[in-house]
Length: 306
Image (cartoon, rainbow, N blue to C red; front, side):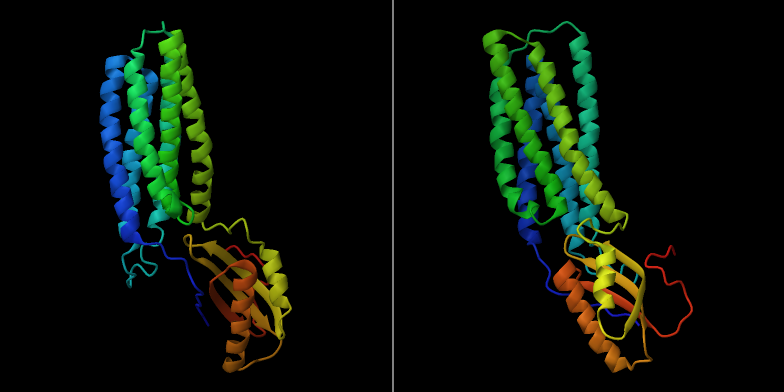
């Protein structure tokens, strides 16, 4: 017997999220074009690397925007969960792209170190890095609120935040090159930007991968849930447990439960209500599916490989 019960979920405003993403996309297109032209004219690798990062931001923001549109689609008979994982997939793609961009930047920076250091027109670097700071700073402010509760928006937010910080680094490099003519700083800053991208991208990549792989959330201990359910009267055994996170809002529990006696359906409903309240308030699980059993011969292990 299956039963699905959902307590309150957090709901973001997709229309507002979509508007903020569109504004950020437009701003990043402007920055990218300006920095590519400026990087080619000035000869600055760090400015071109920042432009590449901005271009990856444009792509990631487009992916995030498409994901918010898909997430609003209704479930159907052949898509019973709808597109609830669209934003998780977007977070995975965006975090992976951060790491790919970082590897490209590292390669370019190392090659620049091995070459003779060119003279760089630092004034162009300074002004365009200021443009990047202002535009990305505005985008960061637009997405910050939704980033706290949505993995997709967090991936877009991280792209923009790291790009704003990269622009700050480029600005510092431009000032150093202008006043001290230390042009190797340009390649050094590119390396710093790249390693920071790997640092922030890896954590989100790992988190989104766990969700896509149906791993149990890190905050939940299966054995403690089983112990808590064993304390409910008439429950003899809890086994064949599966716990997974569908998206930011939904954590699902599926389990087989042996009962001491051959209880009535009405009694099971009362016990099920207790189970739902227990796992929701203590463990944050808001969808429960229980298979009741009495004297059934099957594997009684907590975790059973299907």
